[in-house]
Length: 554
Ligand SMILES: Cc1cc2nc3c(=O)[nH]c(=O)nc-3n(C[C@H](O)[C@H](O)[C@H](O)COP(=O)(O)OP(=O)(O)OC[C@H]3O[C@@H](n4cnc5c(N)ncnc54)[C@H](O)[C@@H]3O)c2cc1C
Ligand SMILES: *[C@@H]1O[C@H](CO)[C@@H](O)[C@H](O)[C@H]1NC(C)=O
Ligand SMILES: *[C@@H]1O[C@H](CO)[C@@H](O)[C@H](O)[C@H]1NC(C)=O
Image (cartoon, rainbow, N blue to C red; front, side, top):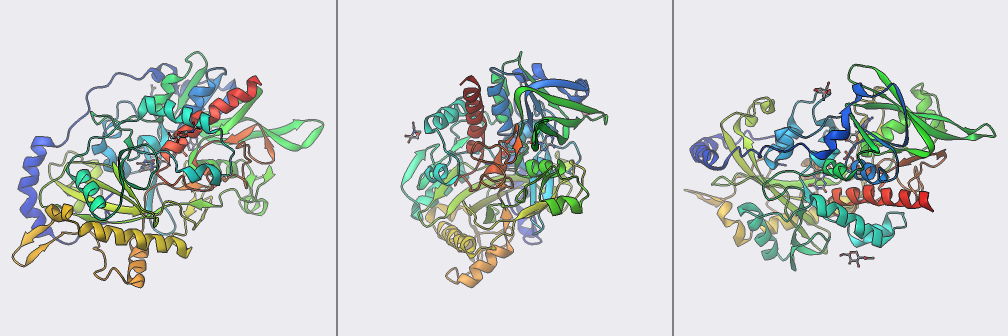
């Protein structure tokens, strides 16, 4: 979370603190999770290598992520389901199971097998996508909050709000917890209130104005829960999960000899780690459902010949269906903020407290224990046992509903490689104005009494030790503040869109112009759910599963 272009500054200071940090670490550091029992889903999960060359299912779901897992579990109640995930199982990987492992996971050197696949957008902002069963919900910061009320009207879908609530509750009963605040999160809460971000809503899963403690997918012992846990609710006799299964394309065929105008999805081709191909085919009234995320779903459509005709032709990909907006309307919520090194070490915390203002600021905080080696050695993730650590405390703001949009283009026909991605941060001045509002609020928070304890005192005075850029001194200057926003922009990993409702999919999330093919994940979002998206996408998976079951029994 901290700007990891870590400093050239303050080495003297840092060294003088190392002793304290070492003591802190011996006392509290490197907490490791208790040994875990194998999750129930292991019984119906296997490597793709062990799957038949060809098999038939009612529903084939591509992508065992945040939306894909609850969807698969729900559909398996009545139907034979295959869930295909390119990554492995998260169970047994310590970094994935603890908050402390968060940074190490997303900074880990990307191999075809690591659970976070790094990508850098054309703006030069480092970003990442989950590549593991449970998807990005296994590598994320765990903050959980339901969509804002406007989302349902603005999303382009017609929701059954009772079923929406039931779906949230189903998820929440299984994997959502009330977090315990420690010093940094408590101080930020107090600072938000002092800075006028009111009322105080205490603990709430709703998106409400003011300051609140949100839900978390980390439980009270610090262990992560994720979409993968929801697979435990699958009907074991009906569901199969294949991991290390890279889906390369959707198989399309004409619907009937009489109607050659409309194609149907009849299956998918996937490849296992030995390089062998498998065909999973749809039977009866079944469907192929893409849940490969905002990067993966548009990429797979393009590789399957569903996209803009001239664009696909330029790649030599045979055009199955001309769909001009595949990969367009791709959004990322810009994040900006400040990081400080506190005078005494802090505990580790990911996002727990948020502040939401009427003027549109959305504020969050984190504190990270960073291996000291990270300061000089970019590959520190390779030696996580390094004994020297530094704590960094961050306050950040994000644009909760960016209007600037970008797009995605293929960089290769190899599905394992990232497409080229452009988000066009702040290309719409409305987004920049909101960043200025948010950064000013951070300035207000830094001036509160609650933040005093985090300053250093030295002969000349008392102030924060910033890691990376400090806010401009004159925070009333729009030009300076805007320049700061542009210069320090990074991501909060809430990218969405790419197959948006009304352009690529219809209001039932069917791919427009193709039968038996739907998309159910963050790529369909025309607008951000206001808050951090995982709650909405977990709900969407469950909700669409229930909808499809209803549709079939009608
Ligand atoms: C580092 C990070 C921190 C975040 N923090 C938070 C947070 O604190 N709170 C919050 O609400 N949100 C957070 N988010 C955002 C949130 O986690 C995502 O928006 C959400 O998980 C996306 O869900 P999805 O179902 O659209 O995609 P994903 O969960 O990413 O699922 C897509 C799945 O498809 C698989 N896949 C892709 N292509 C293929 C293929 N060709 N074949 C087979 N499988 C494929 C992927 O491996 C992946 O498992 C964070 C995200 C990240 C990356
Ligand atoms: C599955 O394949 C992966 C990658 O090749 C391998 O690391 C893992 O041990 C395999 N798991 C099983 C259960 O065979
Ligand atoms: C859904 O839950 C929200 C929040 O608890 C509540 O305000 C709303 O009335 C509920 N809607 C329905 C239709 O039950």
